[in-house]
Image (tube, rainbow, N blue to C red; front, side):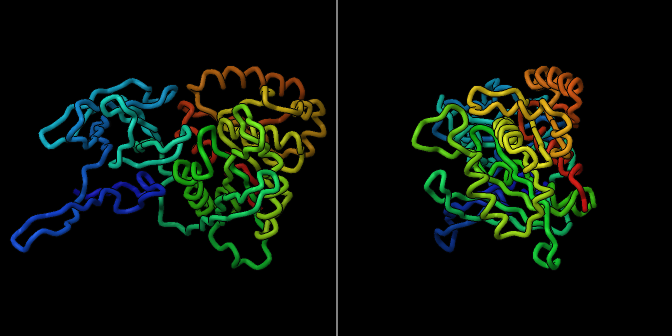
Length: 380
């Protein structure tokens, strides 16, 4: 059984290629020894578009599979049928193309399927799968590739060492004294700095756009939003704003060649709210702002009234070059809130750019938002 899907569809932090290689003891004329074989994939997209899920649990009595609530797959539980070899299977029709978190329930217990890709979301390890059909802009292609580096830096805010991923474009460090735009890109609630790398494919999206001449060569910094301090916080854990400005940015922009005038910040969901708070509280520090599946309305945890930044439209236009909103057409709460907000922007003379696509509150939408946002950044 050979798997010829693009590597980006099934690679993650645990494996890249081959993805379903297993080892079992084999008894033959020469004795007993290890043999490798290809395990059946935990998720397989059939030729007709149906999706077959497979879970090996020979001792289990029941296994079910379900997506997340408020997602394209939905959280409906689908019973899986057991065969004589201990494999449970269920074929589910109607799942649209794109990225899908999903979960398995073995005898009522939520468990990980080791036969399917694993990412980090909802504050835990969780299975996901990709169904082709929503474009190949995030595929691993035969183009020049940038590097992804893991950086450690001390934090004066948390008193601990922090980690972030840094994407550098092809040719970085080989172009003399060239300075690069930098994008600080944030994940959503329940995720961490690995989200935009493994689920979001931010590095591959940038590689492909740069190769096509559709976005500038830039740095992308992936931080973890959570900065817990001595006091428990609601929703947003700690003072990310101070950590970014006092700890992360000085470290990154002291080590890498960055052009501050082309600094950008963007985020999805919870990361979009953090982006709004940081960029508007420090108006002009990030001239390019990307809000994915989020709204500007002041949240209950905001200590400062950042919405005041919209009161002086002339000053706003002078300091902010791009205010981008991207969201899924099925995100009903986001759609309704932004329709009202956009009306206020038009009344005040605040320029903005809106991008929508079919989809829910999930990576299928956010990857497209990132693609469109990157294409709007200045190329020189």
